[in-house]
Length: 449
Image: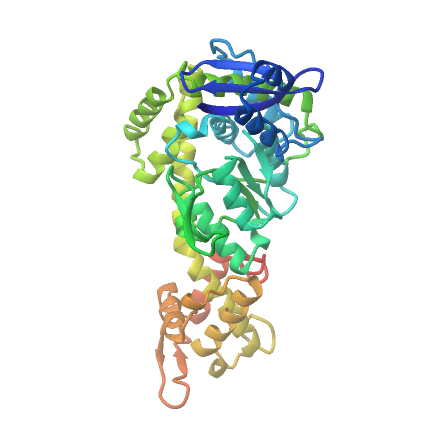
């Protein structure tokens, strides 16, 4: 029995396998050396041959780690060296984000030992470096792979079988059933033991394990609450002109970092370093942090603290404050998301009722109704691929949202139950909300959420 089999390529390009045996012994051999040493164990050699034929995460631009030492692990500078590598190609708005990303990437190398897999979304408008940041995740994480195009079934199957680090670019462009299935994977695979139901080859429904680490790039924060509260988001922005970055990744250096990370992985899975003790320390730090973190934030934070604890980093505040900030921003975003969608739709209704622009000089208030706003909202959500039949906005719900936003109105009598707005505060409320949410055409729905 073996705890893990990790492929690598030596300096000459030959494939090899580092294996943690059931008794925690670590053995490092080339493929040919394994063939020669275990000639009589056909099942063992077949297993190695199968892995050798399916190292799909290795590409020309994403090399396997080099040959690990397999010796007693001690590498206190790995985190700092990793962070310097990231900073040469990726611009972050806040130094804390470098530590979060690096800690996340390193943690993937012993993911089996961790109870949770925090989600890592990079979000911002275009030309902000989020795809470059995601590419760094693909290159440096354990079995990092771009799952932007493969089917959800393939992703779920490989999460259970090969335990890759799954990266998905342009998340905001995914719609319909595929988006729903990916969101389910994003949610259910957050915790060890997470599963999804899927029809197997025998035409029967089975539950498949999908615990795994997922990073995405998108133009905005994911809107679903179950996704937000499992994430530590990194907002991106175009780098300032005075910040100089390297345009290409140093693949040789990245291969060296991955080789060092593979030694870390072998030490973790063989018990030579105590991940569970580091988790307990991280949980204690996260639980005592002020201001207090929610239970979900503690789940995320204590996992991300483990690399720093292992490498004697005595400053956990960067990650803890970032997790707290991310969760607070997510809550605010979710609180505002429905209202902003409604107000963007409402602006379209006001524009249709206005003959001289949106300054209110000539406006037919009879055309401004919650029926019209509801219809406009449904059209907006359909165009953005966000309309879910079970959450189809009703006129009554739109009325409630507009009332919460501060509009004074009542339902009139007659066909259509026309909404009558109080004109005395209409423009004051309207203009205040334009400042808060932005103009129609510049907000989230228009960006293609």
